[in-house]
Picture 1 (cartoon, chains in turn green, cyan):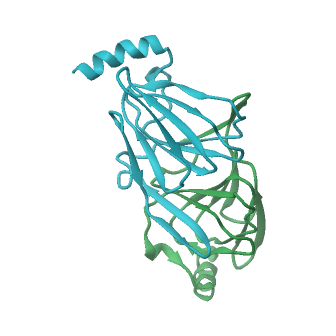
Picture 2 (picture 1 turned 30 degrees about the vertical axis):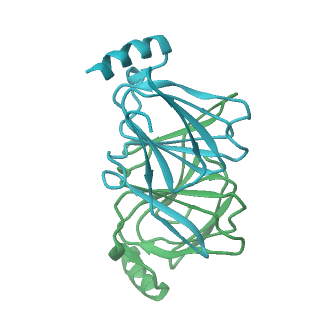
Picture 3 (picture 1 turned 180 degrees about the vertical axis):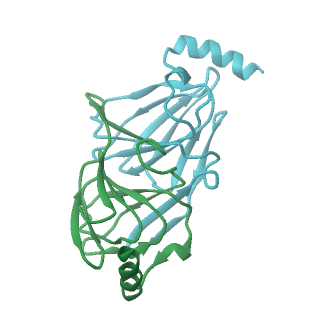
Length: 138
Length: 138
């Protein structure tokens, strides 16, 4: 996995009644869950994301269907396929992300360590690249 | 709506890229989000739930497909259909709940105000009924 990303496996309480996955803040993920958001109904061929965060940490989970996540730093790049509700992708500081290839009915849920703060976003790749080169040099 | 339940509408940031709904703890829901769990892959004809909580509060959301939630107290009963990711069902103290008629691909997500505490569950309807009669009399 590239810098500041990792996969987290959650316990799947699975049986004849279906699957149940539970995630507790500060226990199963390394932060308090301040914000939950989810993305649905994404048409084929749409790519979303195109930003990085300075301080926000997140865990991305695909609860139905499949979605691909491209994560990158100026030095590294990797594409993670999410299609198992018990496997989350942790994304830490200063990692650029793009989400694409949502299948019909795909549900991407994100658990976030902070409330929404527009100033924490870097949406321009040139600016990201400059800040990230500096950040990862330290 | 029956006692200690209500619908909460969340803002749907919707457009050509799909839908995004964001929920912040203590802001969009009336509690800190300590725990998130989700139920998937529930076969047809399965009913889940069959319990009440003494202190836990929750918001239930259906992020894909459809699911029905039967909520009841000893005096009242109602069935809520969840099929819109921007509409959540708040369930407060001492409300019995059953979840059923999950469509294929249905995703039921629950935001909870507390970590998992087995002692907070009431799983026997007779015991629930006795406690609830007492609780709602006050």
